[in-house]
Image (cartoon, rainbow, N blue to C red):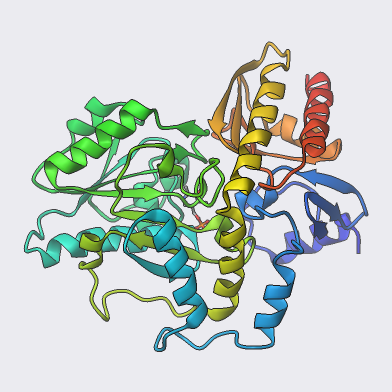
Length: 395
Ligand SMILES: *Cc1c(COP(=O)(O)O)cnc(C)c1O
């Protein structure tokens, strides 16, 4: 079967929810991916910021194999050793208190928002249920996460959405202040907005958000589903700021390509949930947490993170040196990089692909680079060369 065979079959039997590019990946190793026609790509999208050690990483294969022969699933009716080990690591790295595991980013955010409501309910303040979120945010596709995702293109047609989410403007403290009332429970944001166009929060904005939370007794919820797990150059993106969050959600790269979601929460927020309040059948199962443990151990290493920052500097410098009148800004943090253009970048993404480089887009006009965190300097240069070629061909 070649690309065209899979595309044809797929169009027959797969629900039409994605504007897919016309290739069918069949094999990956490190930063390299091959499609069903045998064409090779340098993968600077890594499954949308998921495969942070590259494809089929040598460091994780033995762990996956060993766990596959030991125990896959037993349920959260019992204590699961690998889940406990992963929780210990995330608690230590975050400085927070307790972890909960699920299967995706949307599910992690649902859990975070449910916890915020239950926390105030248990405190005897059930009228505090509103969560302030931000325009251009992305928190996932389930109804609750969608209510928090302030982008019309995602919300349209799904009403009525659950109530209690208010939209402020990112990097605009006054817009947040205006929305705080006796009903406010939490402020929720991405330290670096991802799908919305790769916008890092400014240090002043983040400090102001922390102060608003402190002054008004609000929970601070950080969505690190995309920007966490080393992507920003630190294991947690919030460590680039002076922040004391109550809830931090994670997913995408946490297990290097195995499906997982998680949240770590502060001691006070943890009191919001009691047995029976929230659950997930697969959440944190032995197979995925075994892989996540090893992945987190590798990615949280300071020497590893120093390499992320070195590659970041190299790529940002190379991108800023591109001489194209349509290019307006290069922004981001670590290896979460957005290149803003004056027009829709989908044709550019397609041209990059044709020239052997996989990249993504964010917010329509922004080229998104989220390569594996362990790319080499040579791979970064090769990607820059292909982007140059694609730009020259982009009419
Ligand atoms: C991808 C993403 C989500 C949703 O994750 P899913 O696993 O697709 O549900 C939520 N928040 C952010 C910031 C994301 O990038």
